[in-house]
Length: 199
Image (tube, rainbow, N blue to C red; front, side):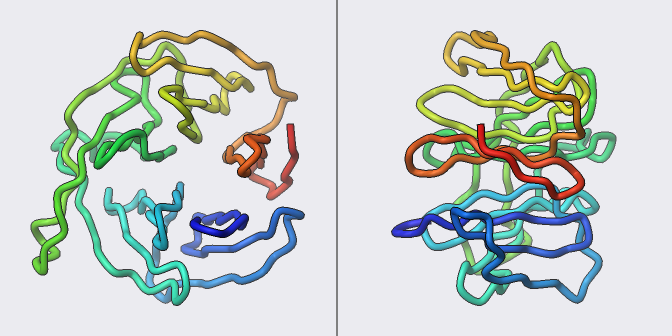
């Protein structure tokens, strides 16, 4: 976030938690409806999170946690996949990872905001067959995707321009679900038990 060092974490049960750099809980918000949040990113003064059950992306106000906009992911085959990771790469361009063996990285383009929620979409503009499966989280930095494979206990550094893996980082065995960084580019990881570690 702008002028902030907070981390935001989402949960399958439709909760958002804000943590400080020492991983102390600052705020937590639970939505009334049955949301299944899988990933979250911070952009300016808003949050964007994915709802796996509806294949939607929500724009959320960081102060009130109010849902401001709902975007459909515009790809007819997505209902056969499970959304996992989500990150912004370039202006109006994003990437999601899915739990599948083919086309498991999808590059999306966000439509401009309008007053009609039904017209808000993330359109799939490119599909990438990444050679590993169960890509549970993504993070982007200077043309590189940092990708966690829960199944393989690895972080892959992936060159988006050359479309190739340039580094593999072995992790201790766990069910890794989350990767983020602070302003000094120190990496933080979390598993599905809620344990958070700094690399």
